[in-house]
Image 1 (cartoon, one colour):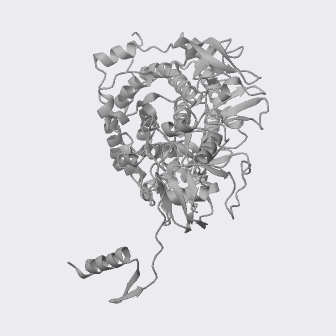
Image 2 (cartoon, chains in turn green, blue):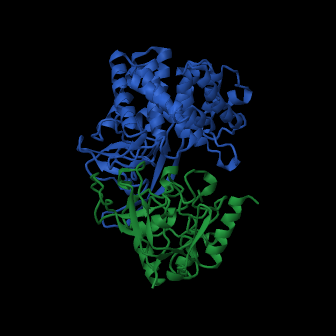
Image 3 (cartoon, chains in turn blue, red):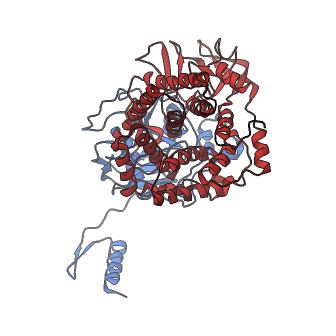
Length: 248
Length: 366
């Protein structure tokens, strides 16, 4: 075994099994005795996103994605998958969908999504939370990295959730945050701090949806892409949702 | 007969509507369309009459082409923004019922032509329609004054795309749903081909160095020439899309006739060959698919019109009319079911015919 690999393995052992912060500087291990807090156990079907900063926005997308900036969230849980037809029907028994589409993402209005989230003891994610859950902290373009391939996404809305050929996860373990259906966020469509581009759509008329759908070009599947939609008008866009939950 | 239908039922002040509904679902004149898009059939009719005029030299044919071109000018003027095209327009001062039912709600009241409403969210297939239709008209039909107008229009349109970093942007400044030609953003290989073809046409027509420079920048720095080779998704088979092939065919038809660099021509031929792999066995399920065969023959100078394909050309049929039930929204928020007839466009078939005649692929006596 080469030395470098060996040291990496040792550090990995210390950090994983002893809960210690270990640094390796010029041949010497420096070990801090502070024990890392154990992340809380997520509720079933959710993943944990730790508190902290991340890179939000983009300089290469639409004007409303600018400026690229450092944003911060508290720790939160977020659903691993979008809410399915069958799950939504548990909340609203009048919700109709084809029998063979139980596992497909439910396409609903913002009010329906919000009501479901409250019924489930959860809430819709903010834009910040959604983007952080999708791209992690390293500013990547897609949930899996910076390159695109159609096998990475549920391209067809008719496909069930999590059925992309490559099945990529976001850094925190979420699926289908690119493609499939758009996803509602809790936020009104507002400019980012420091954004200087005027848009008459900013305000409290439109809600923000994220993630793109099968009816979009590849760029709309980027983690930073924002789109605005009247909360009750899903006639032209397949919009679903996933829920977030505060950590007590 | 098909000409009469297009120049009658589908004629919307020079624009050709894709599908029209007859009363009582339509207006007094059936000027609305299922997708409300008019740029595809409008450019097909412009190309058709340009090819026809090149054969007949009949001023009446040229006058029809001129009127269609003027409608394309209006598709820009109605938006009130230089270089921004509408997908369609309707002369009406209030929203029409189909705006909220049959297509996503991107209709706007025109500020530059207040008695009109127009449909936004232009997509790159319509970009293709514009440079294909205008390019063909400029080559074969337009007089000197109209050539100058074409050049100015293309300059505003393609210039705006370059100014927006190779994106089609809408009134709100955001990229349209299918407007991504940008080298900084991930996009389909087909989009690379379309952008190169659009720039090539713009350079040819305007003579402006700017378009040649942009063309070569996308090739030299961003390798659009390599990227476009894979415009055709061949595998898995179920991802093959003849609709996308139509945009590729129009783009290759324009760019391969204008490109002189043999190294680039090889790459465009590679693209065409990948398409031919599918086209050679294609069932001619829609009117544009037989056009693929004709385009291939024209570009490759290879006789591929066998008896079956010739018979398919002879059997071309543009008439498509059927009875449908529409849910027409009422002012009180309810919907009323209305039975009406819907008629499809024959513009592609008419274009196919005159294209074939122009290139001597279709015998006048068939």
